[in-house]
Image 1 (cartoon, rainbow, N blue to C red):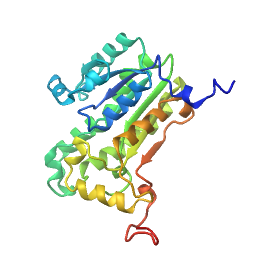
Image 2: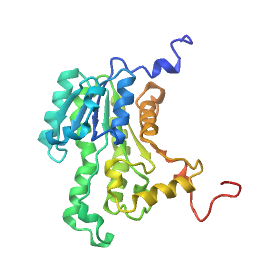
Image 3: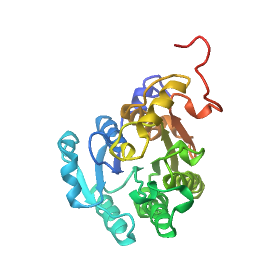
Length: 275
């Protein structure tokens, strides 16, 4: 292979690739950053929203993405998932990339102690936040199996550690992490890679609704090795890498984008010599 053919810039050319990005609410969402990076790299991007009324939250996003296909999909209903994925698959002919950026727990589940979480809220949160990845992957499979592809889900450190205030959502992230790994195994023979991104706290609409979010964000910035804020652009760039041929041998992994905070065992004080 020549140097020109093996250039990393060629691997980041997504011309001819198609992507379905779920969970784009507004220009503060991580999913928006991923969609923008994929679009700017040449991919044709479709968006999935929960219901038509949510289009108003998008603002200029459709215009910035070149008027993409937008499908409605309530991920708690298999028939809607099948309809949405079929619409995207038939419009594009194939799906190369599926981005899962979906999570939900009833607001009331954040208002009480963890031990008081109800069976009803637990079941709903797990269905929407974790099972939906299985259902979406199954719906995309007929349009991915011939060419292979990349499935990428957004998760969070609360699935691995206790993050006070994250409550029920932490259980859904733990489940999502395991779904990622099992799907990676199950779909590997069809050259479909499944990975996760675990960003540190950043101010998306969903994140800022979590009680104590600003304290979480400040804490991670202060005590992470890189002592940096996590921006949506950081998520978009990492997603572009994982969905590209540069990561063609990576599957079943969960990559943290948190300045190294996830490696810390204790955060009692700043390391010596750091301001």
